[in-house]
Image (tube, rainbow, N blue to C red; front, side, top):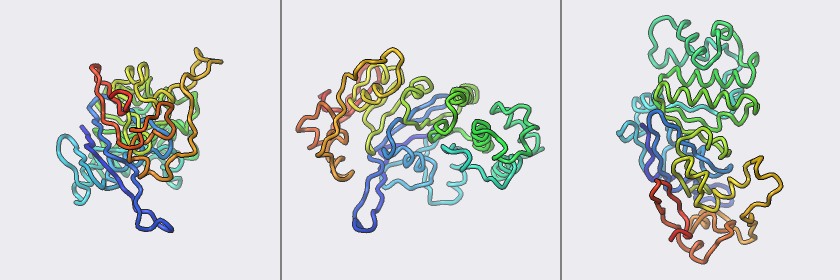
Length: 318
């Protein structure tokens, strides 16, 4: 339904580094299919949110192509952007910041319904949206302000606002990280139900690979702007092929591993590259990898694909 093909995003630097460029995303590719959840996992600053903005036309890629339902998308024409916004909706991390605190839920949900051509009784549609995200009965919430709702309720209103456009694709940028642990599972189950019942395609952006394993059909791991591993969620989490993915999994809480030492040492090298461009000359993880070889800093590793559909970019597999 939505596809990124070799997308690269470079940003101009300012101040003392005026005239230089920073690569936020480097040759990233992924596919979102109806009814399936793809997780994008990585640490802060790895390029996850930049890729989300590109997919929603919030940013133009420096290189590469975005396709929606097989057609190449350009954000230059206003009509094309409006049509894309109706098909691809973004759910932000912090619902308290993403909802207008001066307006009631009725206005917050009514505006996208009007903007995207809803017909009939808007009040009935608003109640229907609220009940679709398990805020029931919806009549109790339509005249409340965001500050009168709990964090989980606010995020459900944000999800309902995204659904008001009747999209084909949802992009959740860490949509549960600001919520209490006790209600994260409920929100993830809501997303899973929307994808299964309505055939929505979803990109789930997170730094928590454990939740991605539970929730997603496919996992892509990104480090320092570059995709380093991907494939079916069970294969990536049970048989990680890239050292960075292995370290991510070892850092995740696991009651069966209490008291055990990690199998891989975490390298904090004083020779870590000074900037992103130096990192991307070879493998971006080379400075922190316990298996670094001379070739790792000289050339970027190619993607190696395994029979189960799992792939990894690491010189260990060459």
